Image 1 (cartoon, helix red, strand yellow):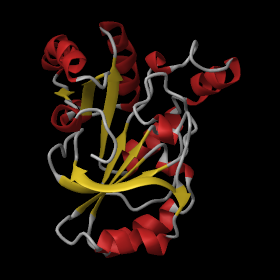
Image 2 (image 1 turned 180 degrees about the vertical axis):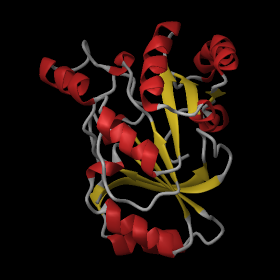
Image 3 (image 1 turned 60 degrees about the vertical axis):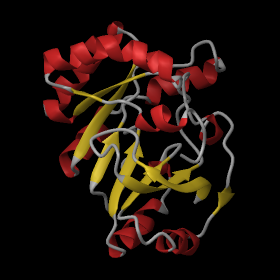
Image 4 (image 1 turned 90 degrees about the vertical axis):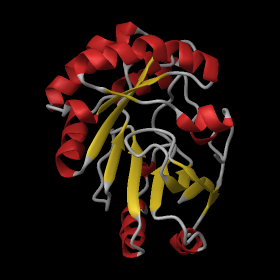
Length: 228
């Protein structure tokens, strides 16, 4: 697998926020979100190929941690993810996979952290017409989302830029029959001040619907930088 970075930190997003975790970030993505906060795994992918043995060796070198997070980029693109997750499960670690929900694989996973990409993500002005069209075509795969939410314990985490995004979220989560307590709204942004501004109204929207508000704890603690 092409790996961009590995690092120990705390989970900064979702229902496991604050949990010490080992992050394995793959490089490579089938989407091009205009606001992507890890462009080094999508717009300009970088990294090197790691055999599974090297990944497992690194995990074993961090015995204090009991949670592993496979993130990206898009980890579900890689066929190697299937044997890797099986091997991680044998280590006794809790496995979270962070995915956009566009690719389906038979993986071992304790929490499928799905972040469907709303129309606010399409890079109409940033990318070529070919990439923008591809992103728009691929960003929502109803069959894959249904299979992931049926087959795994899950959370649906949405990046929200404005109140205009909410009807799109309501429609998609309604189609999936998603539980309200597994729908998470996260303000878009990488600057703590901007995140706080969006959080003020987003919290109120969550309260009205019984959804969860999802802060970006790692940005609050460490800022927008890599390896945290």
